Image (cartoon, rainbow over all chains, first blue to last red; front, side, top):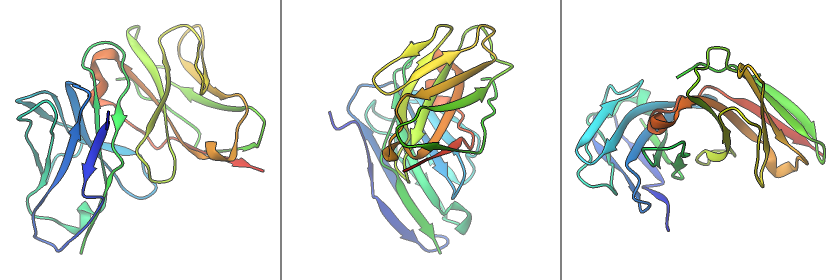
Length: 113
Length: 111
């Protein structure tokens, strides 16, 4: 299993540009989530999904959109990038039932200038 | 999910046991305690979880007090590679995707 994969690893955007961060998992997990981590801080939940076609907002959803058309993929879209969105973005997945752990991807480091 | 409180930082000598505390005084009966760690800027890595009983795996031991209001993660023989940020999370089993990560404890293992 490849686990949770994220692309790209690094990205630089100009203010106002849009882009999509990709996340995929091959473990047939129902739950997928997006977190952001600012320097020296913990992870904050952006959006999450409990299955294909179902998404919901986390703590810091503004400026981000998600969709879940398949079990495997959960892309995160930045509609109009702002410097405040400079951060490291982590995708995670897990089973929905039972006390299972989350599996995290390696992260995407995004800089908005 | 219940809120957790962890010390900001701790030091440990290489080869000694590292004991990382976590307070979760508002934990509910159906909430589990999970521990993750994050090395450098990598994605967090699961370590261990428990409900009531103490748990042990190849990485660590988890000691949960009888009233479940606090817990301790024990790394029995810390190495330099255990230097990381350690997160204690409390949640119900069905909320895996909504885990709340605080700022964690930065553990520095010193030679």
